[in-house]
Image 1: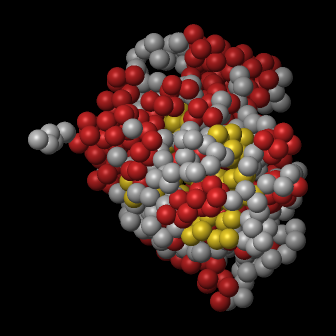
Image 2: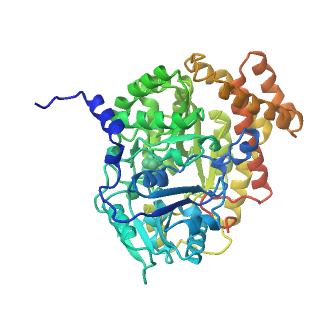
Image 3: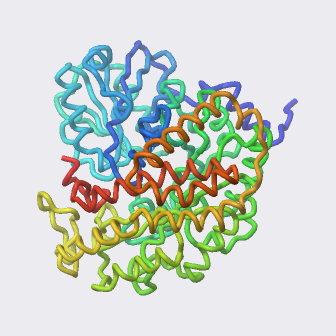
Length: 544
Ligand code: SF4
């Protein structure tokens, strides 16, 4: 007799009772030692690296989900070692230990990915690269022995079989390309046991992959599809449980390209997240990336508030309506942008925004309009980036057809802007240095402290939140912030204008949040002003 289990029970039992079922179906004939390496993440505005010295032990932004999932997918008979080079460099003993070296990463990590390949080859090891960069541009990695194109799937099983049967380097590069993706709801839980979670600034979890929109500059729809693929809610909860087992980072970021790419699925997931938070005493805040038109879904917003979503990253890109039309970002036009931001704030969510400079519609006045938008929106953190054309995007193809792609050593972007290059760079520099002048930034944070944070649900002082480890961590951060920013910082009077009343009101969490993030933003912008940081996240200029 077959007993039909409720869906939730089915999913939980599948995850809990049989983790091996989420590994590759390939049964290896040999024992192998696999070294998984994630290259040092290049410093960028979004990595918040200037905040790390104000924490207890943070050294990197988020655990690298992709390669940790691959590590969990490998045969259980194999020995796996994982090195995140943001935490420590890969040493010659690591290469010596391994039979094969696996690397993953994004375009920005390209030179380091290739360097790891060289070092592994020097140690005589067979190498394989997978992940978003090689999937978009296989030609960036001509010297790897094996390249894995696309997501986890049939190609992964074939690559595993190859590594099982061969220890020597092949005479020429072999390409494995996924035709049949592993459904997201069959993904294994990332191998958190291989890392020290406390070294990371944020936890991360993935619910969906892909985005239904078609913004001109974005490679997500072509790489991951327009019909978002999803995990089962129980699978997401199992991942959160597993993360908590290895440490509590206090905040978890949904790394989905668009958390509401499939609204019905988000609606189905949120009650599970709310229950999980209640059951566990609200151990973490959530953050996600979502399109601005989420502001038109009050039901979703209310559930996100209940699940303790405190931050939402929106690709606003530009406040200019014509520019949004030109870059095919019509989804930002369904309601006035400032109203949408205010709506998020009313649900307790601070908005983080992407802004792009160098669009074809830019004029000499664009910089002023962006700064005015920042003032009116009261958004504290905006990633202000120069336009960069990524391969496999409509932007790349258009600019290529127009002869407007430039590959010049030392240039901040590969786009031939319509405005003079130097003018665009100057506009970017002025925007970023003005936006993060301590006084201006702290004004916006003061607004958030008054108008946004009080709208969040009041979370209980549960054991998960008030554990000895958490209190020690909080006190360490507060102590370092008060010392380095409040006492020794060159913007200490600005800091105290916000911190004094907040501390008096017992609002320690806000002081820590603003102190940490604000410090990074101010320092990073000062470096941009001096020309020490690049104008585009993707620019290889300084990364070399
Ligand atoms: S909404 Fe975001 S993820 Fe989707 S295509 Fe646009 S930029 Fe890319």
